[in-house]
Image 1: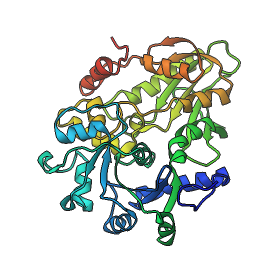
Image 2 (image 1 turned 90 degrees about the horizontal axis):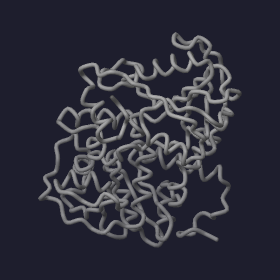
Image 3 (image 1 turned 135 degrees about the horizontal axis):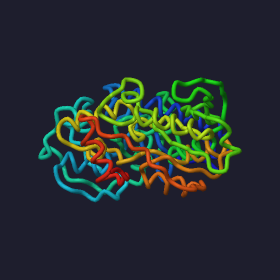
Image 4 (image 1 turned 180 degrees about the vertical axis):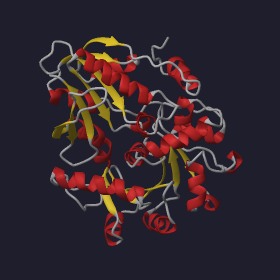
Length: 376
């Protein structure tokens, strides 16, 4: 059976479909349109990186006026009024005066000079393809704002002539869980650390060679009755630069000391910067926090969720390490619930408290008040 457009069979080998998904991510980062196939052919292009050439290619495939697709929280911030946040996306018709790369970037990015809300038309019902469009933007670590439009019946042929990619919607939507569930250990070495001299670092990667995640393993947690485990999302600014805006660096070092003191355990170092939004978007969120928003509202103003992390990644790594039942070192009860939902056997929770430093006081207060962290 052929997909809509008749260009590629569903029986195509999985490795080739993953290769196409990786190219779709790369093309989005370069501002190149992608053709989604499903109920209909639907052309999308990222508002953040779209160039004049990409816009012309998009127009050549579009068979209807374009819509700007974005997260409802971002649309609410743009319009200055509340919207339902449980929808997959909000959709704006794009007037001709806004159909330009710089204008689209200003609509997508709240850290830039904004388009006035009165210049925006009324919201439309988002198309069914909107969820996949925004999912692809997030996989590319771009602002989740996409130009989208139904494509013509010969769109797949014309896309191939222009060298543009065609990819099924279901491949985009399934990829994060597929990549997380297929992680396997690919390398390990002894890496003595100041806080854990007997540590070894184990690297994990999915078969498609996507993003790597690390486990810092101490002792033999696979043989211990209830080893101590910490999940730590990478934080370039806090872990490496010593930023005072967060508590990540001190938490990482204290976690290593706590696990080392117990003798058996692991700290999973997960490539999920900024609760999963990526470093560039975290810096944008910082800029919005400097204008008065807290951590949660800054993420939402960018179009991201409050927490975009996927804990199936950690569950898979723990399974591969042979760690079945463990104590979790965390202040976040949602993390306990998320891991349990992924099949982990959590014997108990232990707190990891870092006192405020005078700069991150509001950040820690937001963690407690709005993210539900159990802090004193």
